[in-house]
Length: 99
Image (cartoon, rainbow, N blue to C red):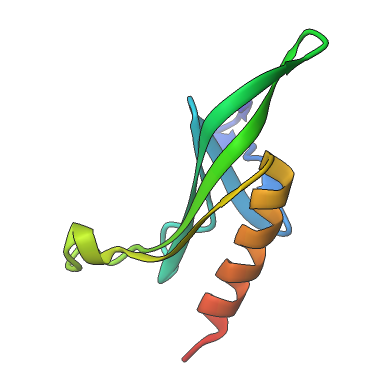
């Protein structure tokens, strides 16, 4: 993340922010009704790079009044970060389109 004149450049995927901290990434706007949490569970070495090989995704409510056990709407595990992010974008798009 680079900062220039109080403007923060955030990585985006399909028009929504993608923020990573360690092995966890959040996809979507925290001000929306839902957000996606992506957790890297396993990695494997490909040449000199660590690549995510097993990834957990969860569609979660962002409403703080909801109990933590009820926050997760949908969850799954995928092989690889791109596959997880692709499914996550579909889940988030559909959830935010609901009325």
